[in-house]
Image (tube, rainbow, N blue to C red; front, side, top):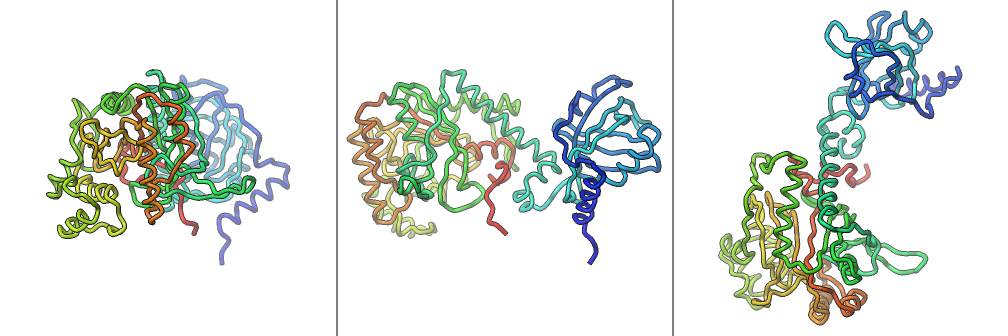
Length: 484
């Protein structure tokens, strides 16, 4: 068996240490990023840049190499007559593609017209043990991109650009909220009750307190406590966790943005939702027209609002409110041939939710506000004043994805207790997504909450929409992967 590249580089590392060369320097003082260095006048001296070696081309006593930093790539030239035989020989023997070096020299333009640093001195800053993938212009193995995202970022410019866009999206949202009088807060990720959404939680154990705790499924109930305490506009970019199935549009570990505003209702919230998303699109994309896959989505104008009942009726012929219980609806869903996994275990609200997700939501291009969800599906939302079977709730659907979920909040502690009791019964019967009783939250409600409306957005999903990605793993730097 031949010696592999890693063994060769380990031998070089050993030799470097034996000759007194530190292969891992503490720092390097740069004068310019590569992007700025390429803008300097020809002839500028004492230019110091640093980066990773991405290519080496040897021509006898002349070497060209390509370096890469965060800002750009840049060519350097190393000539034996400038460096001296020893330093020139050192580069040829010990510097490999993937290593980090620092270079000082002057700016010139080659005969091919490329701006280049004519190297007068260099330092090996960090010796790389493993070689980069052979085709340095890109990786194509999706699973390798997820498992070794650092290589994906390094090799694929579009990947780096996508994650830079993600940062710009979050900055734009945060700035818009701050400029509209919101305060950013932090709430617990470890909670004694899994509350704030209908979802299956992750369970862990607190050794010091000897109690089971839950990774939060949503920050909702704690943000509402902030409103009860006197805040009027709060938000949080909350790392959230749901122990549910994996597919391209769902992750178990994800970023949820939620905000709550005192004295608003869900209609005020829909108006604000249009404003914030249009602002982000203009700032980050420069347009309200978005291309995603083969579809073109127009976010201009006033967005349509449509009842959930009407949507399902149009698509299936099923009028969800003609049924008094889950069993009668279940029979008709099965009779019409709609296959829903675990349908026999589902409650009334969960049946409606899954029917919508199965049949209607995939058809919606949007942007569309789906409004007035059943009360059984919305245990924390305010009951509609005219129709007690529905809530003042909306979802923003785009390209078949739920981008925003929001509603006028339930602030009646008696009503809330009744709904949580019903949820707790469903949970005890095996519905792991149903909510449990939360006495601490009810105590906060009983101390009084103002009218308010709340809002939640899955940031990963929103970023995927704006960056034309179908899989959420492509917008998460280091998605969870099963170990090999």
